[in-house]
Amino acid sequence: MKSKDIQKLVLSKYENGDGPTKIFRDLNGTLSLPTIERWCKSIRDTGCINLSKPPGRPRTIRTNANIQKVKHRLERRRTVSSRKLSREFGISRMSVRRVLKNDLGLHAYKVQNEPMLTDEHKEKRIQFANWIRTNFRKEDTMKILFSDEKMFDIDGVYNSQNDRIWANEPMLTDEHKEKRIQFANWIRTNFRKEDTMKILFSDEKMFDIDGVYNSQNDRIWAVNRSEADIKGGTRQKRKFPQKVMIWLRVCSKGVSPLIFFEKGTVDHDRYIKEVLPVALKFGNDMFGNDWIFQQDGAKPHTHAKSQEWCTKNFPSFIDKSHWPPNSPDLNPLDYCIWNEFAQVIEWDAVTSKTTLITALKRAVRKISQDVVFESCSSWTNRLYRLSQDKGNYLR
Image (cartoon, rainbow, N blue to C red):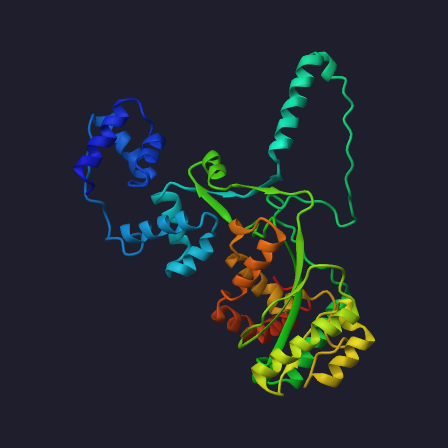
C-alpha cells in the first residue's frame, strides 16, 4: 500500500491538470511511471485512487531497496549498460531492465557525438545566421550550391545503430583462417593450461582527450531524449584532439605500469630500447625465468632485429611465424582489458594531454584483478572455440 500523503499529492496534481509524466518527474522517482498512470486512470474512472493488494507472490528481486540501489547507481554514473548493472547487483538482466523501464520509467538513449564548439565558434555561427537572414531572401537561399568532400573505402558505410547484420572486424581470408587454426592447434599441442597462464600479453593503444566510450552499451537512462541530453547524452568531439599512445602488458598475475609514447612514431629501434626491456623486467618479476612473451604482427614487432632481441633475452616468446594475422580477438587486452581500462578512467577530469596522462596512470591501478585473471584463464577456451568455428573471428 502507498502512503496516503502521496495519494493525496498525486490526486491534487492530476486535478490541477498535470499529466502522469510531469507528476512522475515532480516526485523524483518516488513512484514508478506505470503506477502513476494507473492511479490517474483510477481517478478518471472513479474520482479517487482505489488500491487493492496486488495479486501473486511478494516481490523478492524488484524490491524497493533494489529499485533505490539502481536509482542511486545511475546518479553516480550516468552512462551504464543493463548488463553491467546486472553483474553489480547480482540480479538478472531482465529484472534490471524491468526496474529501469517499469519502476523508474526510464528509457535507454545512445550517446550522440557532435563537434566541439567554443564560445568563439558559437558567436561566429550566430553572426553567419544573422548575415544570411539580413542579406538573402528565401528564394536566394534556394539557389545556393552546397559542397563538401568525404572519404569512402571499399569496405562500405553502414549505420551502427540500425544495420544490425553488420559488425566491424578484421577481414579474414581463407589463408588467415587456416593460420589461426594452426596457431590454436600449436598452443594446445605444445602448452599445458598452466603454461598459458604464464603468457605475458602485450598491446598498444591510442587515447585522446575526448575519451573512449562503448557506443553500444553506454546508454543514458532517462525519461526522454531531452532529459538524456541534459544528463550527458551528447559528447563533443574536437576536430584535432590531443593524443597519446600507451603500451601495456597483462598476465594472469596482474597489469604492468604504462609506457607512454608522446612524440614521434614507434619503429623497431625505439621498440627494442623503450619497450622490450621493460617487458623483460616485468615478466621476470612476475614469473622468474619461466614465462612466455606475446606480441602481435605490427611491423616494429616482426622486424628481424626485434625478433632477434626476443630470442636472445626472453625465456620464451611467440614468434612471428606462429602468431596469426588479423587476430586481435586472441589477445586478452583487445577482447577484454582495454574496455575495462577505459571504463575506470575519470574522463571528466581530462582536459589536456597532461591531465590525460595523469588519468591513465591512475586508471591502470583500478583494473580489477578478477577481470584480468578471468580474461587470461579463458584464453584457451577461446582457442578451442576458434577451432570449432573454422578460424572465424570470435565475437
